[in-house]
Image: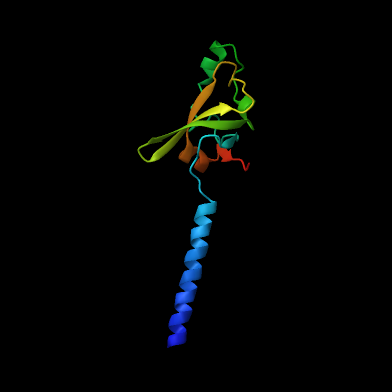
Length: 123
């Protein structure tokens, strides 16, 4: 009986230790300076990244498509916690402006990660 209790205690300790290390290594909270990559959206436009509508891009002299931002690396400049959602302010890594006139855009971090619109890049 003692051996069974020791075995259960040992297994629970090992289980707790491995679970604790896994949650630490996959911390998904963004921080300022994180590098993200913008993926192609599953629909025609981005749902959780606040890019302007195509007609506003044309009025500002840009080309009416989002292909110029596909695969772009962006840096998190600010993290905002609204209710249960985490919003981030994104800026291009190369310093250029989005569509020639936007320096920064905002995005719902939690939803855009789930939707696959942005992906965290390992540094």
